Length: 290
Image 1: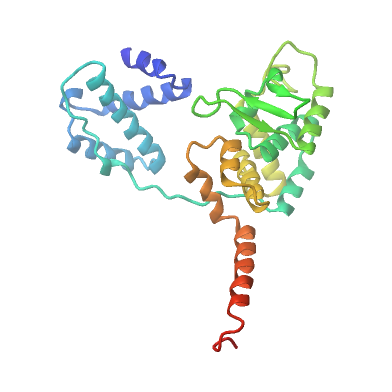
Image 2 (image 1 turned 30 degrees about the vertical axis):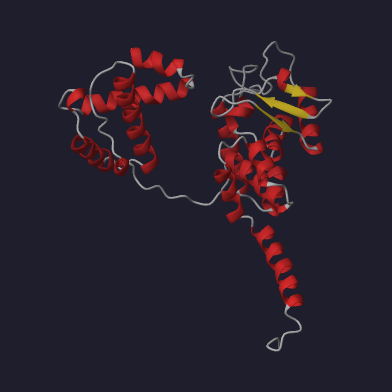
């Protein structure tokens, strides 16, 4: 399919290509008119159909965006004269919940429950280095620079590379695991330890299942991404600059990083009382000051 090749030329991730094609396939199966005859009214009916299936707003918006990209492709690369039927109002309004993070007691309880050097190292990299679960799964031995205590994240989200740094405890956890890691030609760091897939790279879903196990064990509402959020919040509370956190997490926009300001209550509290002390000192001599 020409559109598949177009997506690959744009360097879209394999999973993105798969999702785009699946969304288009479902849309075409539903359609009762040729693709060229689709109007914004047709899209509105398709939205009603998706909502009736009780799909989440995020899922529906992803479907709509896939269709929009396909019509861009038809116009720009296939040179078909048509108007993109997707309108801005077709996108559903999305709730923007605040990033959830763990407090110090929850972090301690979680890592107290984590068993085995491999799991300790995986989750410590998420907490201290802000790695995404897929970045942990794809981490290779060659990407780790032990003397300089840093890791090269290759082809991260958005096909971007970035450098992250390891704290003492993250480095220690990783070294402890690598000392007991079975000798293998596999370049990925984290390997399956039990079952028929022993010695193979641990998959993203495999890591998520380990997290789900510890969530049940500790009775904490926690996911892999919560550890990343926790790192960002801890850095902000330690007065790290937003641009530094943005670079470490690999955010495209500073606005994404700024969301942590809304949950970093400790920093807000400190800034408030510090500012109030200055204000009260300045107004101490005014007649209206009690």
